[in-house]
Structure formats: C-alpha cells, structure tokens
Length: 463
Ligand SMILES: [Ca+2]
Ligand SMILES: [Ca+2]
Ligand SMILES: [Ca+2]
Ligand SMILES: [Ca+2]
Image (cartoon, rainbow, N blue to C red; front, side):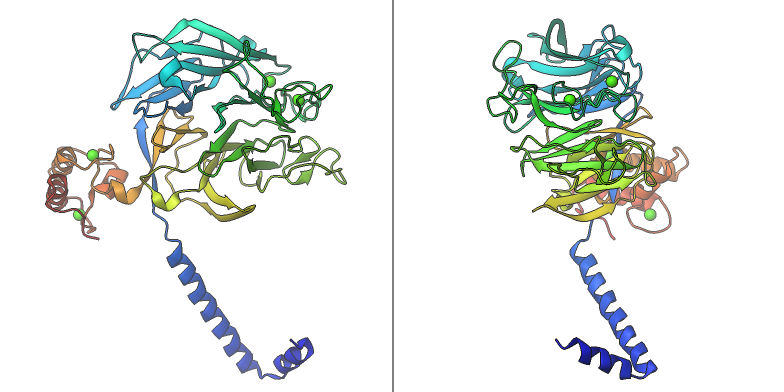
C-alpha cells in the first residue's frame, strides 16, 4: 500500500466526511463486538452454598469415583460431607500435631491415585509454631471408609521452616502418578535467605517424588536435576515465593502454579506438566518485573508468568483449577482463580502459549476466598474464610431450585407456596431463583410451574 497517497487522500476530505467515516467505523466496530459477544455467550454463574459452619475450611478434594467431599479444616481436621450431611466424626484429626501459627496448620492433602486399592493419602501440615513442614502418609480404616487410622501415620518428608509464613502447602498427584509438593521460600519478606534461587534446599521449589518406590520415597529418574552436584534431586522447578495453590489439568496436561507475590505482582505460571527444570524467577523477579535488583535484572534462563495482576487489584492470589466438570460445558477449559483480599473470581483460557477469554465474573461476594477445590466429578468449589463452601453453578440450572440443592422438586414448590402465603421468607437469591415465570412476584403461579417441572409436565420454565 502507498502510505503517502492514503494519508494525502485522508487529509483532503471535508470535516463532515471524516465524521461520517468515523461513524461508519464505530458502527462496524459495534457490529463486530456484538458478533463477538454472540459467539462467546457465557452463562450467569452462581456460587451455590453447599455447607457452612466449618472451622477455617482451607482445602477440598475427593477420591476418584466417589460422591463424598473431603474438606480440610486448617486447625487439623479432615471432614466428610456426604449426601448433604457434614459427618460429625472427622475422617482424620491431627490437631495435636499442628497449630495455626503464622500461615501454618493442616494445609492440604492428596489421595493416592490408587486410593481405592491401598487407602493411602498424603497430608501437608506445619508442626507447632510452624517450625517445619511435614508430609505424612495415612491409611483409611479397613472397616470404616469414613475414618482414617491415626496410628497409620508414616513420615514421608520433613522440611525445616525458618519463618512462620510462606509454607506453600499443597500436595497433588500429577498425571504421571508422582506426588508434587509446593514449598514456599521459607518466609519473612523478600526471601532474606535467598531460598528460592538456592537449589541446595527444598524451600521455594516445586518438588516431585515417587511414593510408590523407595523408603520413604524414591527420586524419579527423570527429575530435571538428578545427578547434579549441590542440587536436591527432589526439585522439579524453582524460583517460587509462595505457591499456595497449584493444579494439574489432566485433559491438556498442563501445570498451573499460582505464586503469591511480594509487594506488587501476583502471578500464574503455566507449563506442560511433563516439562520440569524451570526457574520461575523469584526473587530476581516478581511477576514479569525485576525485583532484586529493582531494574536491569538478568533474566537469562527465567520462565516468566503469562498472567499477572497488580496489587491495585488484590493482595494475594488464590489459585484454582481448570474447569472440567460436565454441568457447565460453556466454561470447560477455563482456569479459575481468585484473590484473597478482593474476593473476585476471574478466569481465562490458555492454549498455544496464548491467554484468551480473560474475564471477571459477576458473582455475589462470599468474602475472602482461601482456596478452590474439585470433587470426583470435577465440579469446582470455592472455600471462604467465612466457614462456608460453595459450588460453582450455572444460575439457569438453578432456576426453581429455591432450596439450592441443584434439584428442582416438590420441596422447592412447597417452599415457594409457603412464602406466597406468608408462611416462609425467601432470601433475595431465593426470590431470583423462585421467580420462574419472570414477572415481578414470587407467588402461586411460580409454585405451580415448579411443581409441573418437578413432576415432568414441563421441562423448561418460560423465559
Ligand atoms: Ca515458613
Ligand atoms: Ca530452594
Ligand atoms: Ca431444590
Ligand atoms: Ca413470578
């Protein structure tokens, strides 16, 4: 194209012609963006409260092919939520071995991929005063699937902690069947011992061990630093500050690590789960920015995060999961995360080294989000500092479900009927869900429609 000619023609046009041109451009943009919106219509998501009254819920998981939810309470208990009931007896109680000093406590656990056969699971907790991080294996009772045997404890790994914060804390098995353990830089601030860049210790690292061989574990032969002098062979990747939560996407075989930042930047690293050896940069860098030194840092060999956000938008990243559940197909493949201080929930897709579809969801506030969790059906959960656990849901699927058990049945119709005669009071969320005919009121006509839906006379509510 002849740039000079284009410029010349443009400058010769009358002012009104230029305005018309600009208007046509705006119109085209508007049409384009409306097309884009139509192509990416997303459901209205909703956080459906599943269970409350927990004591500092901090992690949630489940064994494969199991309908139970296992919820970690930070003081040292694992609770089971089964068939709508929080069982009074904990699955495991190790409150005598841990306390919640600093950022300590029982921080997570992982079921062995062959839990159904061997009954093993692996906890990650800090010893009293957060003096050390301990990885222990426990085994379920041979006679009661809802209770673990406290006497089955077996120490797998202990890592001394110099400070009470930045203990990492997540255990998870990868697609390769190896146990991955996220370790923070030890704590204080600004990594005073330079632990994240020092591969002679296990602080500030992602570890990978083989719990099916060795005593108490074996080093996988394909760990990236095996045989290198002065480097701990357990290290899978390093240069992490406090990787509080990380997640494997078993569909795309990617590892997402959400690393909590220091003063300015929260970051998410995404790498193929088969690729180890990365230096994720801390404390040379914080996010995509030099930290020490503050400018002109040597970035050679560093792997930078494809996603970061500034402390103007939060204070501490809470990493989540890539959604792979069946109930909300529109968000399949989207990675969800939050911020502990601001409580928003955001997501994006990551493929071919590109981040797309970044969005912040419009959701009711549920306070400080401590962690996400995933059940055996790959439903996604949000755990709040308020002691409650919420399941991510499509609000349209909840229409008519005023009891919010994700089933529309006679109980819902009765509750709406009772509220219409002043015998029950609905919350504003219940009113939104119960107003199935979309008019101004929640009344008998809604109850009738819900009843018809419950017994199969209708399969859809009027829009
Ligand atoms: Ca620490
Ligand atoms: Ca280290
Ligand atoms: Ca219901
Ligand atoms: Ca209505």
